[in-house]
Image (cartoon, rainbow, N blue to C red; front, side, top):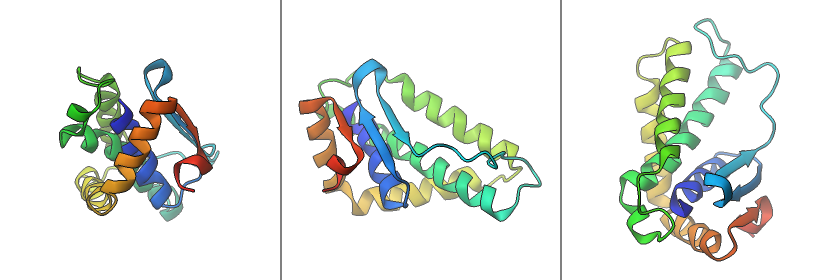
Length: 143
């Protein structure tokens, strides 16, 4: 679970979102700034909504991809199937469908995968800190 949540934190932070906290407590959570009131994904969404959705989807892919790539095998708190990854995938598909963009899920997956490839050390560092401390506040993740 630490690697899953670390993947969310690393992707989101490097895409410019402000991290509130990331934790492995209560099934794991990564919290960001509040979702803007104007964010309503739909087929006729404007560019601002689409850009926000693409970033949110890439962040969700971050956790899923860390699991998919086998990082959880190094994570003693996350060896079993982690339901967060399924929830992330469901939300990605729901958002892409709401925006009526067939290729959006694939594009955001590639974006997250590229970022994780270049930031693997950050993922490992944050995951290890999560294993030690269980909860990190935004600035603690990337001093």
